[in-house]
Length: 153
Image (cartoon, rainbow, N blue to C red; front, top):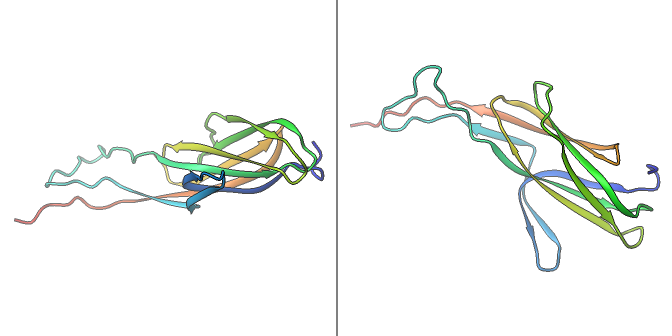
């Protein structure tokens, strides 16, 4: 696969949802590069004990990738690796991208992701096609803590 011959990555973004329209045109809903995860909120005067704060819920997003074929034809192995802020990586997600038609034909890949966010920081989605790095997409996750809420009499 020669870089000058394609395939070409036209877009790589994270969004909350992808709607696949009847005419096969996708609509990307709420494109994001930052997520604020809210900390636990005690209700009814029962604040969690110190050190017993439950982890925040996982973040659910879709990685939307759009390719143009160029001279590429047939099936190509796509690998997406999520690198956590601490430098560790989650298991690779592997998919197949199939290029058919002429040089201007394309292929869209939508990969649902679920990110456990015990720590804030920058998460990187590393995208490669047939072992060739195509892009890195950052996602910044921050955690906002709120004090316990005690109802007023």
